[in-house]
Image (cartoon, rainbow, N blue to C red; front, side):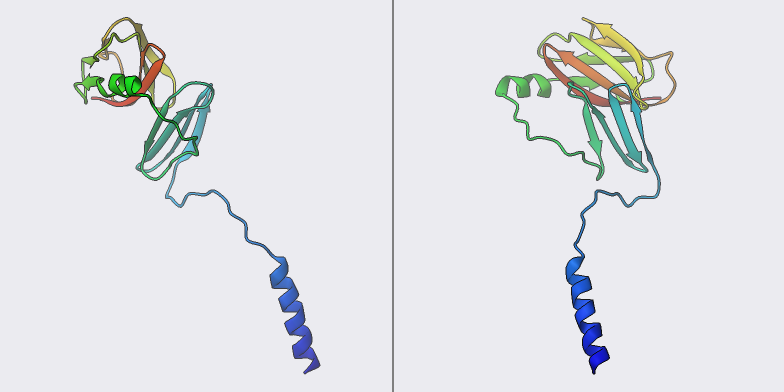
Length: 154
């Protein structure tokens, strides 16, 4: 009886003294994280999350990987500009065209590792003939607004 009571008291103290911890983790079958300058790329099979870490606005998410972020509200003008952007054809093999209600200031095309492959200013077309097939990210700058689109080059 004394042994059972002692065991019960020790167990009660032990379990009441341990606390739960919450950690961020992902259950997946593979993947990694790459950091190149100010671009961070996190990916697993079927899931991609790319974000600019300092000051910019690159953020592309697919699947269940979603970074913590602050709530941001666009004003009506920003929504109109960003929703008017069209990128075609996609997939592309020769020339990629970007159209918008306002003039496009800059187009930056990044490979999946975050390396800048092409950059053009004050043009709405990019020649992709010399690039390898694969997925790329097109950062479109219009004034102080930026939007990123996923592009497939075949």
